[in-house]
Image (cartoon, rainbow over all chains, first blue to last red; front, side, top):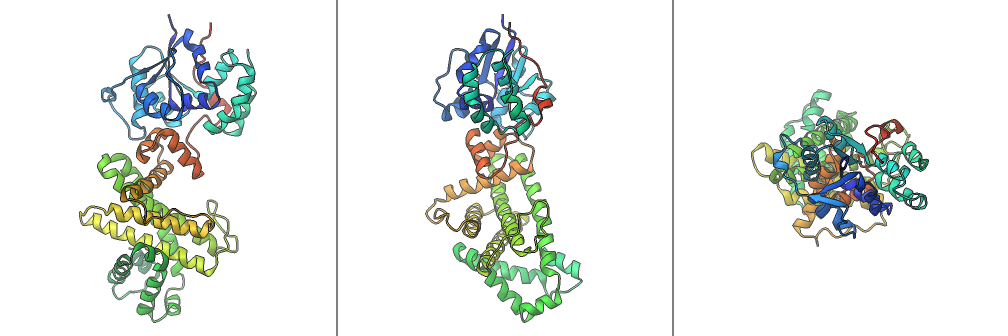
Length: 159
Length: 269
């Protein structure tokens, strides 16, 4: 039985793709159900990346009208993620977007920065060292990390 | 409204400020956009000369007028931008695009004013957020002045329309936002060729101007990339590219190492 659900935002899927680690996300599939929404997969990720949907990733259709309230600061794709997080057990919403993370916090949804998720994926051997080093610069540029956080990412070590 | 503020500030009197401004706006907006954005300064100058006899006479009567006008206009535009950005987030999509077009024109006008100010302040006394001083020749100042005046005329007219319960002229707003943008680019990047506005369809002009408006909303309000993309009618990745092209950092995190390590640790057995 899996430990919970990892819900991945487009910013995370895209940043992993830019680092060339997209398929390394499958590392977590033995512990977690890895999810995104159909809206994110079909309308945000697929138009820019040539990946067919892998077996380890499920994209779910979500009805955002079921949300009790929607503030104007998030877009419809963001709300699909929030709604998905509200409908599964033990969700962890993973995003790089500060406003999405803030909304998850307001709704008491467990959340995680995409860069922490990347570091944990690397440190627990989901990404090999050479591939990690090769993709780091592209990732840092994609996520616009400040220097201190970028240094922390570069200094990550396998445990 | 600017003249009224100027009047309050200087205790001076125009014969009929409203009529004076209306006269300028009317004449400006009768011109085709390419001419308005090239020669708007000339129209303004002619009206001032008619009213005061000469520009020197205006300067004597209102010795601090330019500085006051600039400050008031800056404050006014900042207030407008914040208000319109908020409203654009709250209204239904049918009305949203018109507001984004207004915001695009406000944004162009503010950029032009910033460049004019950088050109005026050759002593280097610019504010914290201002551009560094710029060397502008008389022709460039004239051109930027024309862009500012033409943009202001459009805003003035559209706000009046709105106050009178009329629909905003979306095509005119979009067209003027692009002409303003082009005028600015011609001065700042003379080697860059701005695509011909006349050859674009009205839908295309609206799409481009709406993007500028959406970009401004993203800068004004605490919204997600997803929301910004939705306003700009782009994918998130396209919107992030638009932000990058305009030197706007996406509001991604974390910003500190401490923040990075917040949140749960994943289980790996």
